[in-house]
Image 1: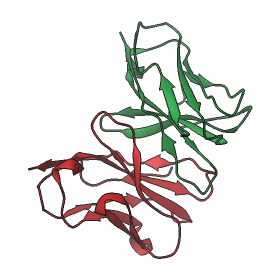
Image 2 (image 1 turned 45 degrees about the vertical axis):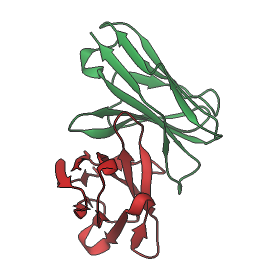
Image 3 (image 1 turned 45 degrees about the horizontal axis):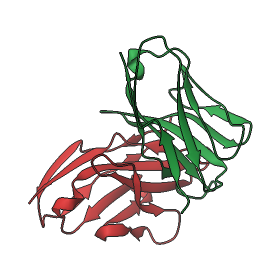
Image 4 (image 1 turned 60 degrees about the vertical axis):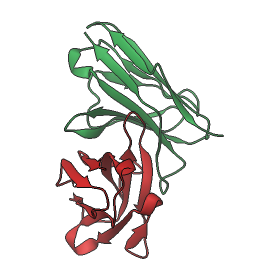
Length: 112
Length: 114
């Protein structure tokens, strides 16, 4: 069955380190999204991509970057991790503009 | 900026009680509307969605929602909740001009006591 996976599921890192969170989907969806989930804020969009070589900033993109070199993967990089980036990160994908988004299981990141 | 408001942050009910969770959005154009559910420790799953047509949509597990365009609302309902409905519920909106990205509300935590 097609699915969307994220790795690692849990990560503890130190302030200032570079961290990359992986997202891989086997649906062959063009659209991929990264959200962070924080108590009281719901889900906020970090970056998104509508296809290979396409990336766009969301509402909370500062300190994060993404790259899309193939259809299946959209890795999220924290250039220099900060304690404010402690959160749960969800990746999602959708087939097209008129379709629902499917979510991955999430990565819980702690920055000490 | 677009915004999605969920009025209740935490709702506590007994089993068999009726549920209504409010959701309002700020965009006046064409919208697609979604309710997602997140069970403890799990990822978000789609409960139901509205794209067009009948404003009363039915989803999984006995949930339904009504789109009222004049009120910019998309409230979620269930006539009789179960303990297994304990979860966090998110309303999300896709506006016509933003090519697929979703705007989420802050979520409502539902706790159902057996």
